[in-house]
Image (cartoon, rainbow, N blue to C red):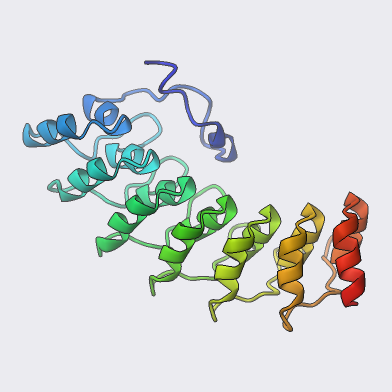
Length: 252
């Protein structure tokens, strides 16, 4: 049981989390974590609190959403008094966790519940579910979130990066295309250090994304960051990405 409950390897990005197994987990937490919908239903009928928190301030709904257990999520959303936006220590809501893991069916369920905030920010980096999904390359989740008119498509995290910036940095071509198709997205947004999506894509050596961004007339090929004064070409040269260098030089 202990090994099964070890915290996800991605938790290192959240400063409020350690690598310890969560404490104070109830039977409801465990049933939700493992997707045991029949047990969750019995516990709800017997009056167990659906909002109980473990040592990470995670609720049963939070665990079910992260692990993609659609039926359990539905049961918990229907439970009297459940808080669909309960935040963990890192400020992540159930929607944030589902978006981070790419569980489109769970994201759909949560977005259908009008009381759910579709655009919350975590307390670590200030990222929204859209930003998290874009960073991880979950195209279907990005598409679902962009379809909600309460979601800011160009939201900025603490470091000033937008969903497009994160997707470009990681080389997620499909997500970049989805975001650029939205009129509310700035293709040449600047982070807090003056870096653009093209700058991040060039540094990462993501040729397909660089090619897409270069086709957009609003993208400044020669933009310089505010820390090192480097252009996208400088970043590509520094990292040794010959393919990207050729693309940038041919477009100059």
